[in-house]
Length: 462
Image: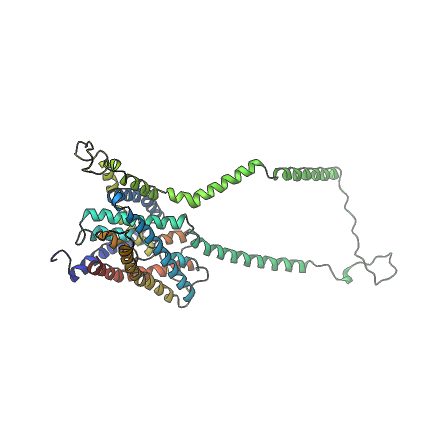
């Protein structure tokens, strides 16, 4: 590599190297899954481990190191960009839904596929490799790249779990269940009608003639004598009747709205609001981001974790800041996130099955892959240039910020949708097959498109 900027051959090699690394780890996950070493239960446990422990460590360490009062405007650029990209993907989903063949019970799931992207495993894995080469400067840009990717991840998580994005997945199955219930209701109505038809009153000929009547044309059904009750049976009936009336009266008093019921309803409403909207805001990744930003913007507090020549902070025996061991722990634990994430990506892809799809569905999968991996990056490049030149939210010298904003416009759909869909659909259902076809088309195309995108970005943009 000659000079400060790599040549075209070097650029292609640098861009393709992370792809090979990610593919190797993901294939390892596929092999472990096929051999039964990684069961669905183990996959779920590892996903929980990442979300609740390792990812918060990675976010806190990278955000604390990368942000300060001088570059907080970058946070605004990242949040606005993440919202813009999700809106762009939602428009892609509507285009595919309107123009291409889809299963009738997967009309909302395609919107989730378009709007949500893999802003976790892929960008972080790229950063850990590519930031070691020019035009980046090693560890400093690695921490910044991970921090920028964390902003994208948290914004998407809040949109999915606090702003109703998950409802797009649930909606398809609600429509399917309503249709199923309507069909069951129709069958039940038909069976009741048939039962009424079979139990209709007998024809007049089968009725006995009242001997009192002088006209044989007036017929009345014979009255059967009322059975006589045995001793004590009448009393039992009266007692049961009084008991049932008493129970009805008690129930009517109990069901009357009261203060206690009002309090209970309010508690249930608060629990639902917490679970649906507030809990994701206070999830471990979100809290790690919030705490990291607070520490990063209070210089005296930050100097406890990271060495700052502006403050004469007493050092630990190893000449490091007093709380440097916290950063060491978080960096050590967070380093496992991209590896485990790629293994889980491989297991998710290996369990996918494609069957029972409508004719011509390949057009839908190909269209979504083209929109997200070709059209999306073009829009991302134009958007990044406009934000940098016209808003003042980006430092032109922050090459990692430019790279991350462009790259996040060209990654495939998030594999998290696989787990969300599995919660409502059985493995091998038409909904899972549709999602599987979409993801397989994108992740296979990604090998080429991401190499081209990264190569172009390194050689022409930054």
